[in-house]
Image 1 (cartoon, helix red, strand yellow):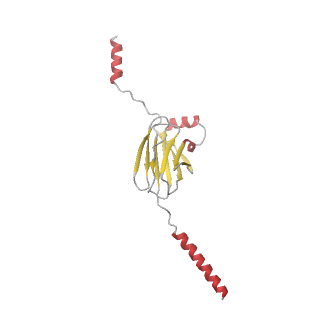
Image 2 (cartoon, rainbow, N blue to C red; image 1 turned 120 degrees about the vertical axis):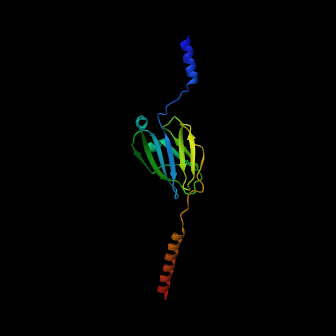
Length: 170
């Protein structure tokens, strides 16, 4: 009876801690022209077993939901390592993007999502495992491309065409 009481007492006093087998970390970095790099890191052994059990490209396991539509990465590469391996995904969002929601479908445990904005600000959120992020503000970090060089070249082309046409009339 004493042993049982001691075991119950120790169970109540000693906190239980679960080991995060996934060791998931996600860092999403935006550049001023709207391109992005997503580094999704997981425990190498866990990631290998998980991706083998669920066929298909890794990029199909993440969702970047920008202004109500999915933005697909243009490339994905595996950077194998120990103890963590990283999938690096690259792509582009429109420079007038306003909001982002993030989803990673392979994990169950909570993990940190860090968003490094092009304007130097950092946004961090704890994602509850197999769940969507909150709405992340993307406004004001991208710069619009200057269109004046295109207009200047077009104007020069038109002016030279007009000049040539006038010379031919004389």
